[in-house]
Length: 270
Image 1 (cartoon, rainbow, N blue to C red):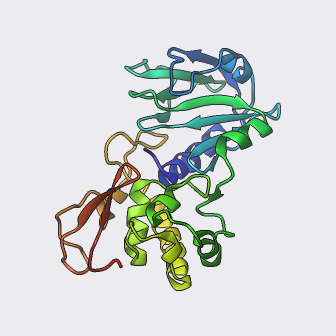
Image 2: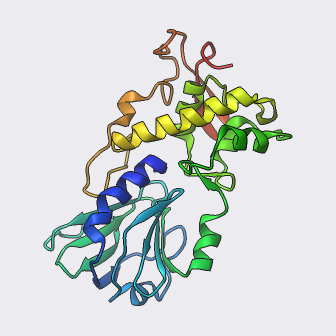
């Protein structure tokens, strides 16, 4: 599933291409996504002028000239790409926006786990939830330390909980915990203040590096221009079970936490 770096990469790339453009036509070929495309989706988007696309957690959010917001969640395999006027539809092209400059913006999703909607501010807040964004400056080591007190859950589960911190997923939690020297199974309540500070520093470093590399293209992810990211080449632990740690040469281990494989070095992480 695309996480914060992938969604941020798409937003930064498409924002200048879409800002000020008007949606001339909307074609919904397949409404049966994980959250069904609303019957009035095309009507509410058609004729609207797009503001600057941004990101909230793992959601792409674009303001419209009538005060509503166009929301896109890519799910597991969704892609949002811009192309020329003569682009022919391909398999799994479910929604197409035709812009006033002749270009098309296409949502393609083989597994149909994504979401596209037009929402007012209140509805948008309910959808994206209360979690603090992983790149929000107010997310500090002190914040993480205080929010981990009394928590019986693991650090991996806490960091992946979108109600707490928005934008993180399996890949980047594995990577940042390795950089911070904290095991994914560590009970959150046992996190020290110093470890909390290291975790936040590692979080920002990993996310910013991943954004600079265009995200991680492990299977389906492509950016808004159909380009693959390259940060997967820099992964230190994710999907490297049995391979030597690039710091100490200890074999990387894998463990299942909250239904997902988590990767860590038993020597570098405590």
